[in-house]
Image (cartoon, rainbow, N blue to C red; front, side, top):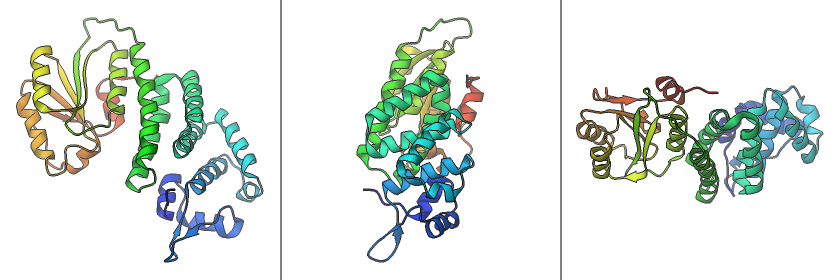
Length: 295
């Protein structure tokens, strides 16, 4: 079972540690556990409860009233929020709880409901993407284990692949050809899959090489397919030590091509990139650069 510090809970819930302590001491909403050295920590069940309490408090429920509710009453009231302005946050919390519990039924029900109500694009942008950001933080703080991460990311991956396969692309004079790949050692492909979905939805041609592709293999594919652009994402690879050399190798290998790069690893890159390399740091930058709609 994962253990969260009060700082972790603060970052995951958006509630200041001072407020959390008030909720504990004045309202006895939850009781932190203690290590052998008397350091407070919280469990998965505590996190799930706190996330639900936060949703209710944002909707105007008084903390004193929430404290008097049973766990089932809290869950029922949270479910009713799916019809309010907090609908996205409710679904993100549902996915977080499904991941912690490795509950495929809850995941499937949540995702199916979201796609039916908002469509895949809005579901990805407003629910799944923020959820993946939360997963990233939980991974860094050991808040989830590999089984939980693989469980949830594989289910999301399946949904996107089905959506990609269901697209009907009509090429036209505005169609461009993109070659998408992840560098060798990089296995986090959900963002790349979603970009594939978005680009295909705008009638662009995609050559998708997938995860952990050696640079020599990318070069061979480029020589065969001659794409207009290349796109890759750095999440865990290359290493900080190899980052600058790899970016330069991309620039040198594809001197006549525009190469787009996104991913958290770019935070470690502090120099100006080579002329044919374009960094897109945020999802908003990606959407704006490629004229991708949120609808």
